[in-house]
Amino acid sequence: MPMPETHYPPSLLDQDVFVLSRIALTARRRLAERLAERDMNRWDVAVLAVLTDRGPTVQRSIAAALGIDPSDLVDIVDHLLSAGLAARDRDPADRRRYILRITSEGREAFAWARKEEQALREALLTPLNAPQREAWHTLLTALRTHPEVTGQR
Amino acid sequence: MPMPETHYPPSLLDQDVFVLSRIALTARRRLAERLAERDMNRWDVAVLAVLTDRGPTVQRSIAAALGIDPSDLVDIVDHLLSAGLAARDRDPADRRRYILRITSEGREAFAWARKEEQALREALLTPLNAPQREAWHTLLTALRTHPEVTGQR
DNA sequence: ACCAATCGTAGGTGATAACCAACGAATGGA
DNA sequence: TCCATTCGTTGGTTATCACCTACGATTGGT
Image (cartoon, rainbow over all chains, first blue to last red; front, side, top):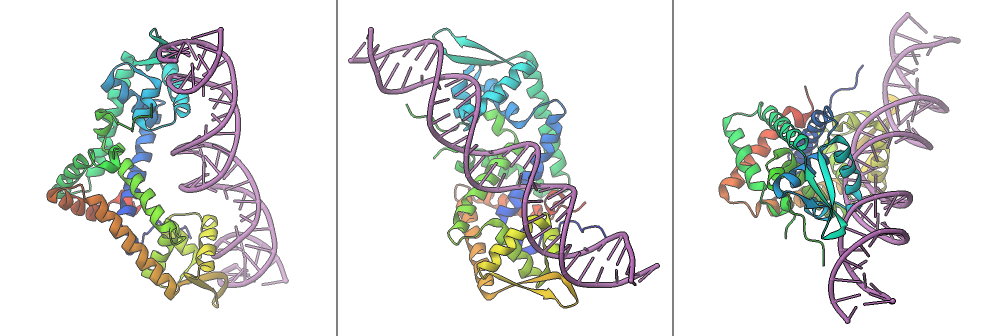
């Protein structure tokens, strides 16, 4: 007999932290599958987002903006460079620094990633009725400035 | 000069999957800190939830209900047993099986964990205004039956 | 000239998540 | 009686996450 599917107990589903964790995990996994089709991952997207919004940026600032260790950024940057989605030059004002910039391929890749995320979002909304979708938008918009999300305290 | 705090770029915060991931991660971490004060973790709570809702249950069914590998359940169960939060007996009808049941200490610990989760939830709601809180409740209630959360398809 | 600090990197660590194969004990149908 | 299957466990693997130290090159203040 095959193992039954997961069936979370009601008193676990009563816990918003659990529910949040589940929806976030499955959404993240699904998005990862989408991004993998173009050999991208969520850190690639995050770095491209920084470069899109800020323009050319030094590596240490990118790491700081995303809250990751500079040593962890190295492989992400190498991958973006090798994929042609970003380019970097030494800062002539300070040759210790690299300045990263997005390329036109990077812009296109980032636009694609945003569309994939939007498509996934629409799919997540499908089982919801109109008031629930409204609640999704209201809440997710509010969370963009929530201290626990922005990391600023 | 100290490293500046994280400052996610607006076009990353535009992505609901990112925002969901962030709020879920910080909520999970904060809850983990709370639970650790009583030497508990989220899997302990999950197993106690199964036992609370279902009554005495065989181990394989607990693993299936929570979507985890039976081999990963072993340490969780050992910990609950050693902490006195659960007890188990061989199933007289089939001595291959163990039947787990929650103890009175386990019931109390689970009630405490639910209160901690509720307090954290209230804290997360603090920065939100009334319509946003309403949206939180509407959405989280809806997500309890969302296929991506319940894992049933 | 010296040196503390910065920048990016190489390489490391520990923890967690999620999966797997194989084993001994036990079961129940053939 | 035999054997395929189940139950729980041991012990393993891979991947990811998030942190660390130390290094060489470079900078700028003293």
